[in-house]
Each structure stands twice: as C-alpha cells, then as structure tokens.
Image 1 (cartoon, helix red, strand yellow):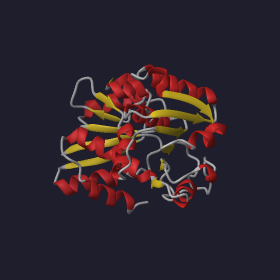
Image 2 (cartoon, helix red, strand yellow; image 1 turned 45 degrees about the vertical axis):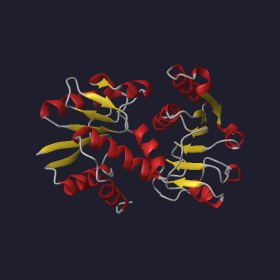
Image 3 (cartoon, rainbow, N blue to C red; image 1 turned 180 degrees about the vertical axis):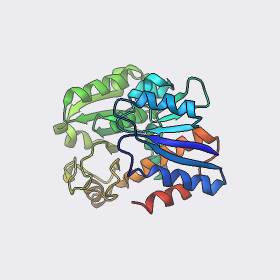
Image 4 (cartoon, helix red, strand yellow; image 1 turned 120 degrees about the horizontal axis):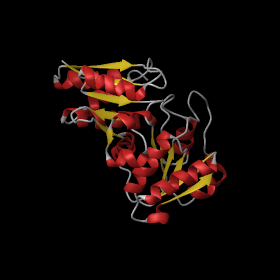
Length: 273
C-alpha cells in the first residue's frame, strides 16, 4: 500500500483526505492519504521523516510552505513563488512543487475563462503569490493590491524579475486602487481571507462588471459576498473549491502519473463543504 499525506498545523478539518481517497477508490489504487501535524517549526523535519518512512508524496499547507524549501529540490515555479505545497519523493532529494498556481489556471479553464488581458490579485500572501505568478505566466498583466503596499510592490517586483515582459508584467498597489484597476480588468482573484465565515467582500460591489471573471479563493462559504456581488453584476464566478480541487488534481497526477478522476474528487470535496 502506498501512503500519501498532508503536513500542516492545524489539519483536522482538511478536505484533502476524502478528495484523494475518492481518487484512489475510483481508479483502484492501493493507497491511503493521512495527515501529519508537526510542531510549527518542524516542517522540514517532517518532510525528512516522511522520506525515511517511505511516504510517496506529501501536500504541504500552513505554516510550512516556506519551511519545507530547505528539505526539497524546488521545481522552477515553486522556487520563483517561494513556496512548496506538494512534495514528490520519487527523486532524491525530493522535488517540491507549487500546485496552487496550477489550481488557479485550471479553475479558470474549467469555466472557459481565457487568461488574457489584465488581472487584479487582491492579497499578497501565499495564495496571492501563486495567483500572481500563474496569471503572469499565462501572459496577463498582473496588478497586486494589498493592505500593506510594500508587500504588493515586492510581489510585483518578484513576478516582473522572472518574466520576459520585465517591469510591465506586474505592479503593486494599495487596496484603495482596486476600483480603478477593475474598470479595465478581465480577471479578479481574491487571495485574502475576507469573506471567510463572514458576509464581507474585499471589493466594492459597484466596481464589478460583466466583463470580469472572478475567482474567490475562499471556499467557506462557497457563495461569498464577493461572488454574490459579481454574479449580480453579470460576471463569471469561480468559487474557491475549484482552486482547492485542481491543486489536488495536479498533485495526484504528479505523484501517480495517472489522469485524475476529477468528477469523483469534486464530488467528494463538495459533499463535505
């Protein structure tokens, strides 16, 4: 039996185990997906221990996505983003990937959204970094808006530094710039926790319009205030469970070499939301 798992703290409410085990059941793979909750400073040690125990692959979540960089050989995109959320032990040292970026791209693709033109990413944390790099790599001009302007400008500079378009690839702003930025934008990603278990949006409703595609990384609730406002404005809406699903799909495919049973994984995920 192969063992895969998730390293994080906390992990007791994670939706990854049922999603991945549904995939194993669907394809008849003899595997289990388990969770590990090490101390907050033990992310790299957890990866090293998993390698010793013969674990085939790990997902990595808060607060370990940066810590585990020292225990893996990061793939180029993960190195650029500065965070790893998937570890593959098929190599020595293990390879670290960032499938959050693919989660963003595949979530939009599933909703037939063409990733061209201008994107606004609200938030410059882990999800914001993955979204900004992913959208820039798709050829979009990315504007990052964040409460702390310096974090937004630092992220934009990091994106631009590794992009063929250079300084034109990305720019950083404060949150007060969001309404003006959205006027000509094609894509909006909320990569903050605003709207999680609360009826709030990080974006004024009157700044949204029908030419936007809006992805909210928040998935509890599925219909956030932002997505309700976006739907009312005629925008295309993508809930956060799609990003969660497709980052898991990407990890599953990396580990197993099999095409993931997306429908089975999606069903398992949404029945628990």
